Length: 327
Image (cartoon, rainbow, N blue to C red; front, side, top):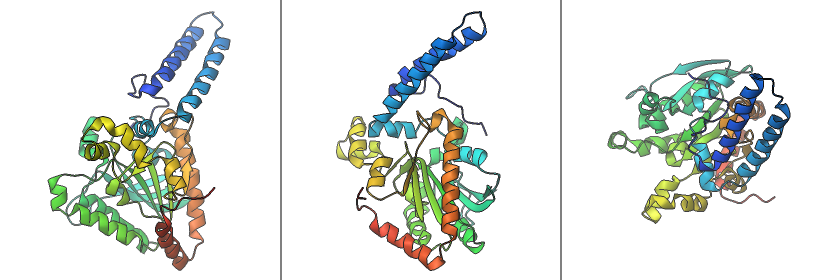
């Protein structure tokens, strides 16, 4: 697995980031010139770095919902595979749903992190074109959701907590998936996760699209990364239905209230995990470390709750969703 880069390439596809990329390129050129000549350019480099920090903070402080959707989809943003590599001390993948097959769009496995043992379930998008095609770009089939549920029941038997990483534009919409019971598999997961008798933590790390996200999204604690999104439908899908045009996706993103700030206000998530300046794709290791600390805190907190109280809180939590949280 390729380790994520520390910063995005100049051609990263985000229009609002191009001035930042141009400034970073200038800094890199000056550093190279400074190390290969007798010129003293440290002062100028420091001024440009300070300017880059201020400009990055300004740009990311006023992103529109649609721009945040594009940050959530950034190619260099850490994915589930990166969290497995950078965050865990040990990981043993578990395969198959014992019914049809092994869906690569969902990864499950036994994990260890700082002495804490748990089951990890997450959407897998893939890094290379070949892997992305094999994983259907993170769009799971019904066997993926059945695999997730079957492994959750194993974790329940072994009294292991569960952590899910959500990163999907939605469940796979093909005919084969529908024939094998896509809607039923997702609905059953939502129903049964309320009754799983171990702590469950859910984290949206990128895209949280529709039922594809909800299929592993019922938990005792739910968090989102700052520039992720969580929505009943993708902005493009919403625009196609309401306006019959994909060009209206920015307007749809604004209307859907899908940003972490909106969802925290509405009580759909418990915590927004702040990303490094300029987004998780600029400093994946720092982003992973922040996620790790939050997960460890919640694992230790939930371990102390008696089982009846844990299940009751989980049920009441979802009953309260959509009620705006007062400051």
